[in-house]
Image 1 (cartoon, rainbow over the protein chains, first blue to last red):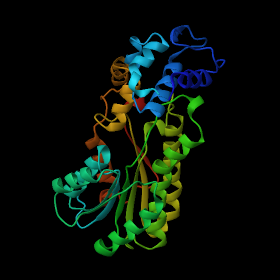
Image 2 (cartoon, each protein chain N blue to C red):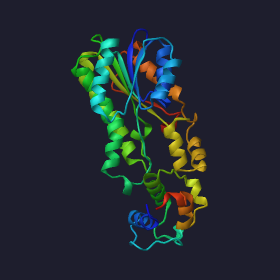
Image 3 (cartoon, chains in turn purple, yellow):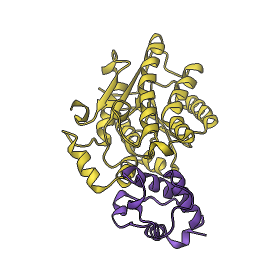
Image 4 (cartoon, rainbow over the protein chains, first blue to last red):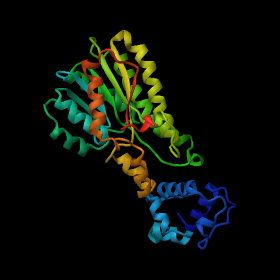
Length: 77
Length: 250
């Protein structure tokens, strides 16, 4: 998966406009962000990368870039 | 109480509640047919079981074609079955917006359909002991109470509980009893570990504080299944036994 595809997937599941997310986007600033939003991102990462994140991981994931680093550069095309 | 000479099928036997049930049932004298996905774990379990002549088959319960042939083959070796514990189950924690039809299908296939399909095969092919038998479905307290982010799982467990009740009426004339067990959070299982990871260490502490007697262990559920399989429960059918350390009492 390309990074841009991840942004689009997250935007789609969180009902945001396509193109509204980029590396610098702060997760907690996303409109309507709540605990279910964390579950949405965990599910996306699990289903597309086979990586199981925990809620505790999100204490250090502030931005989309932090999320990418957690996933690992080697897992992106 | 014992299970001497009883032939019992256990699904989901390669781990958790299924594994604990297999160990206990064998200890109590039963001859077992074990189903599970992980062949290595089933082989290891077989080595730990008391008694001999147990059989196993490793396959995915979503492959229903294999299910029928596996049961018939085992019947040819073991003879008529006296009981079933349907412990196989899958669970995914996710919000409503991601719980699509495919998610429902996956969880219903294993949690609900496979268990009832085993009953259908055994009944249709007359593979039950004609003197009577006992079926135990492992459900969940989330089939009784609500829980967030587990819609498909809780709905599937509710289906197991109500389906077991209906089946208990239909099969009573064949002297087959049908019950379900609804455990609370079960310590140390893959499923529970997955839920803990999804949430947080703080959530685990909070959850445990909501159980007056603490989280359940696999052996607690196995003990209940043993009772329901044994002749000591011969007049108990159509019930849902809650094994939850008091969670639902609040």
